[in-house]
Image (cartoon, rainbow, N blue to C red):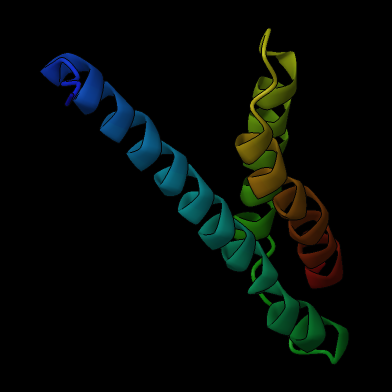
Length: 98
């Protein structure tokens, strides 16, 4: 006997699975974006200073997103994990660019 699922349940499952993979991919790329500050930090430390405004804004933005993820009734771990490196690396990049 073949059991058929209602179309809405199939669509809902695909949407949940799709969102899961999109959130994981976005988390990975967010982390990569912040890791890309490492060459700028190295340049800053070697005397070739970059502009401090952009990494400061990135760090502040990350602080807001991490706060949002933590303060939600159900913690939003992908948002928290994706933005933690932005706080650390953004602040290090900002400080070394001064």
